[in-house]
Amino acid sequence: MLVGVTHTDGRAEAARLAAKLWGLRILHGEKSCSDIGAPLLVISQFTLYGDARRGRRPTWQAAAPGPVAEPLVEAVVAELRALGAQVETGVFGADMKVTLTNDGPITLVLDV
Image (cartoon, rainbow, N blue to C red; front, side, top):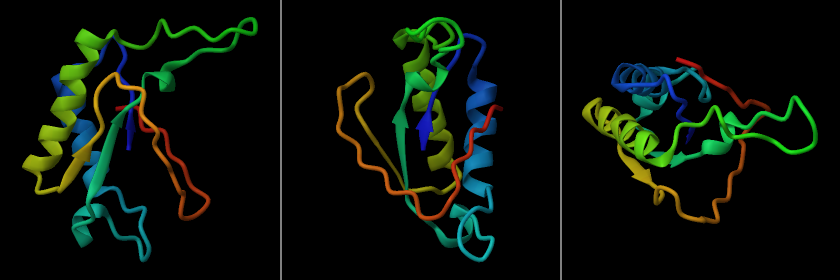
């Protein structure tokens, strides 16, 4: 899961997102991660709030700054773990090499 945080997000949004992600029936046979105990990888991704509607250079103004975003990404992870999920994480703010393989033609943007 790539998790982006904006300025208006708070603990309530973190809890709603965790519950939604854990119960969303997007796996084979209309199963959710909670149905099969699937492990999750949560990566902070501020670029989800990139805006390139004007000009040729995206702006990241909608993304919350690190001191705001980091505790909320951690809250999503904590909420998922409280729901029983096995969660791995990246390093907040690090320049990481993450490989993503989509198994099927689906990518969802959830705005809770």
